[in-house]
Image (tube, rainbow, N blue to C red; front, side, top):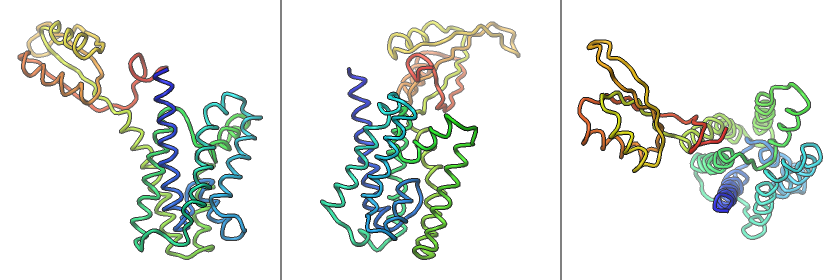
Amino acid sequence: MKGHLKNFTLLTVSTLIMAVGIYFFKFANNFTFGGITGFAVLVAKFTPLSASDFSFIANMLLLIIGLFVLGKKFAAQTSYSSILLSVTLSGLERIYPMSHPLTNEPLLELIFAIVLPAIGSAILFNIGASSGGTDVIAMILKKYTSVDIGKGLLASDILFTIAGFFVFDIKTGLYSLLGLTMRSTLIDSLIESLNRSKYFHVVCSEPEPICEFIKNDLKRGATIVLAQGAFTGDDKYIILTVLSPNEAIKLRNFIKAHTTGAFLLISNTSEIIGKGFHSV
């Protein structure tokens, strides 16, 4: 129950963060990068529909198509975020209509248009969810074709972004192109930061006190490997464990205070699969 509540909270907060970044900074400045919401900016220029309303219609249509093509499991993972994002964008348009950007600093607004949706997307991807949109198209193509989905979606994003040069002006197009370039890199970096852990190699002669501290105080597991010193030929033990950054500080301080002659190798890692981390 606690895990479901945490996931629901993360879904809600991340989707609302995305909505704020898209509505107040992306739509208001006509930035055309980023899937359905980027396309919505172009549609709003030529039709009576606003970008928010077009996003709502497009996301709902894609959600219905996804339900029939991809099944109920897809709907359970995607529908809440997709509906919440679409409804929030349409609601913001009616509660706080915007006829111009919030500030006269387009570069500052571009940063928020990139960072806020990127944070929201990173949280969603990290818990195995999505906000719908072009993700639905990607999932359908993946099911029925051998098309390289990543390249296909990147190509559509590039087309929408380039269209911004002709539909609006060169400055808006350049900002959109910059946003497209930075967006995917930032999302990858944020996901890595959310999953970052510390991987320990501890080489020592007496592993018991260190392992007891890991098990009893940190509530983590460890693996002991018997080794031999290349220079002295003495028997050594290598303790392997993965900890959160806060736990890593505690272990490092414990070893420093209670163990002499230990050799530590500590590295950053973000791909941990197993008990206590991500399930297989």
